[in-house]
Amino acid sequence: MATGPTFFADPYRLLRELQASLKPSLSVLQNELLCEALERIQQLDWLLAEVRRKLERHLQLMETVSKLPHEAPTATGPGNSSYHIVVPDELHAQIESCKFTAKLYAEAFVYFAARLRKILRGRDLALPYLQKFESRTIRDVRNHLLEHPEGGHSRIFNSSWMSSPATGVHLKALRQTGVPHAVEDPGLFVSAAELRDALTRTFKNALESVAA
Image 1 (cartoon, rainbow, N blue to C red):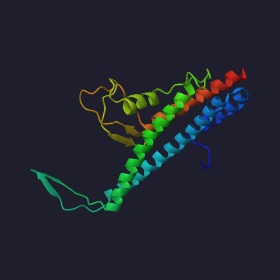
Image 2: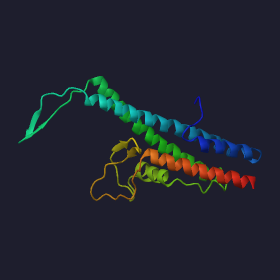
Image 3: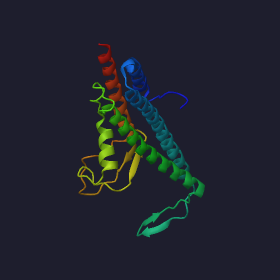
Image 4: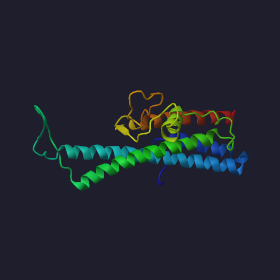
């Protein structure tokens, strides 16, 4: 990427500082894992920005749809009628592309964030001040909604999703009566903020431990 992360600027900067301070004592494997962690943070930043752009574009396209002329109303029952809007094929294709890409990038974000979590907590990196890192929302959305939906904390097999300008993409949003609500996606923007703050705290504490 041409520039450094923006939303994840603080954890990216702190991890680079930590890597530099530890470099004389790092093994080749440890250094490679920290390089991957930095790259994952860059990827997460890019994905988050792209999801925001896709959702904003989707809103713009739907605003265009709302201004299209309506066909003559069709009776649907006593005293009821519906209005049909004919959406041009090209416009429909743009809307579907935005929806498809926003969901794809949201799922990729969760998987890349889960990989970052695994690196930091892993025995291969073996840095005690990073092994307690946790981002519960990323962990739960990845484990229960995406990777293991057959488990007791999910049982959500549909591919539904919804979005909000404030909270972003919510994966597996459609729930049926009787399906447990133990795990729900609070929205990508909420998950990303939680992840950023947890990374920042962990890296700050790690730098303080190294300096002590």
